Image 1 (cartoon, rainbow, N blue to C red):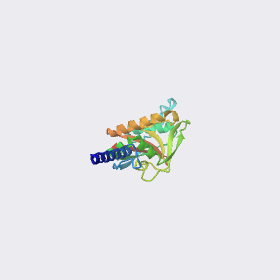
Image 2: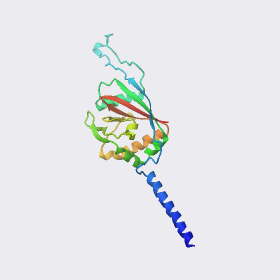
Image 3: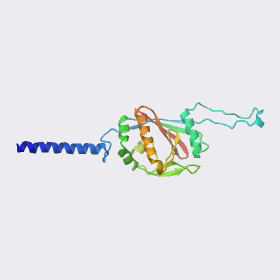
Image 4: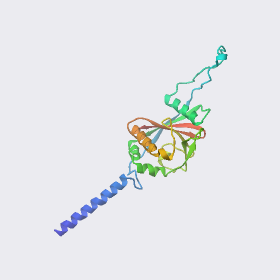
Length: 216
């Protein structure tokens, strides 16, 4: 009888250790991916020329046939038009081209990022500083000292990139709205998990780069 009790205690203690280890990895341990095959694959890169828009003719020169009017040299994705407009609001002028890089993300990576502890762990793989736009608002973040092999690198972020837009929208980085950024990140991951594309726009060497992510 004593032998059976001791054996039962041994089995139960083994189960408790197993559960502790399991929750340790689920909640984010040193290898918070839990062995999940994290994969972000670059599919292709294209360079898009933005529309060339001239000023409309003034009333005084309306009879001048040589005065240029609004014109474009190609059809532009509405999302990129929004990106172009908002970059100008941030103070970036004279932009004529946007490099668009398309990536495919597997479901395991999305699951990994749904865990906030994993996100916090990944944030330690880069340094950052808040950048102000032309109006003096804290709307951008510059990233540097990116760890090799981190998700920053896998998602196409390079040292010195200035995160300018998220899904084409201008953000504001203050202590008072930090919780909003968590909610925004969660919503973007949900969109990605449901098969919708998400994007971030960075300024790289004075030129905008659109990073597009879709589910694989």
